[in-house]
Length: 458
Ligand code: NDP
Image (cartoon, rainbow, N blue to C red; front, side):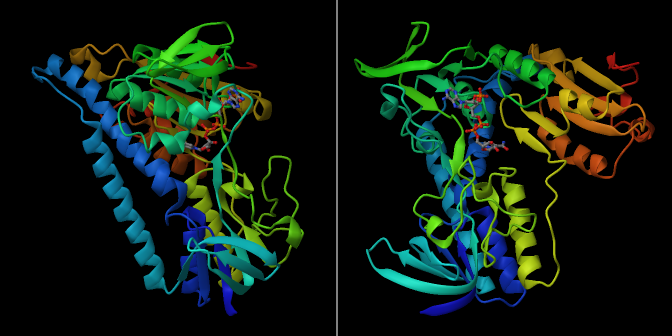
């Protein structure tokens, strides 16, 4: 049996980073992956999704171009070309991941790993052969998978986000269920590319957990973009109807569609890993419990990324993987801070956020000032596009510190990244006010908002 200092189970964002950093600290590392290197983010998540977001936004660009004197004649979209080019880019990136690992000296094993002890795994390869490895440490970085089958009649006729990336054609009519990141992003992609899109939401608003203004503003903007929402509804059944599908909602409404896409959340990917046998008990959500150094209840076993269900975002998995390797092999104990996480929802328009929502902020900072600006972007003055941008800053009046930023509109994801730096430095509203505007931009609103829209507990 080969022995390694570290066995990494899972070749996604967290596992790959941990493996590379551990080798840089001198560890002998094996990485086991059963599917494709790069994980969900690279293979069937963030990266191919963002490429499709770009593709989908040309439609609006073509429309707006007319207001600037352009005539765009007979624009046509070809799904096969986009899919081919997107898949080729994903394959290229997968190759880069592989060569980076190989160049770093990581030993890559293809197959499915199962823990057989606190320091041992077996690998079942696709050709049926088995192999055992031992490791001083084991890192589980197996990510998450779409929540599976449920009681909805005919659910097997629907697809999830994995299926979305395999669609051979652009579906003409789509029913999307869910109102989280994935449902909304894919709904906007499909709408932009030309599909008719109905979104079925069980609650009364999209994006639970986000700031109320963001939720309301984004839903209105998506409606302007031609998406139809069915709030307070679930899908009762999905059935075949002639050449298409028919989704029946709980109010009896029947929606005919070529594709029913359900994005109802993701769950930690732990099935068949053998965790119980080594003494790891999963939490109520099925995640691996870890301490702030990503160590499980078994001293030699660590876990990072979505499988731990802390903050389920690629950059966090990367950071956790890096911190783990520094802690265990680099001689520097590093815990990851899970506060102040910036993120973007790549809908059209997109949303960018960092810090507390207004509701969360009020619990900690009751003397809260809310600065809010809703405006037509300059481009719309000639293009006539009816969409508006929302920018919002939350300020603790006692310290003048900005504790939340929320934006909906073009490039607000990019804004969130930069505002996150400022918030990390504990920036005050005074510091924003003292910053010279970059004119003409949308972001200049962030440094020119003078009067609070709401002053809580004045
Ligand atoms: P989310 O947890 O964000 O959303 C799940 C959605 O499904 C919610 O709207 C939820 O409704 C709804 N839902 C859950 N169960 C049911 C049900 N039985 N019937 C009807 N509706 C249901 O999950 P996603 O799948 O969208 O995304 C998973 C994770 O992936 C996210 O947490 C995010 O961290 C990550 N991600 C991040 C992206 C980014 O950073 N841009 C992009 C894509 C994914 P309700 O609100 O009522 O519970």
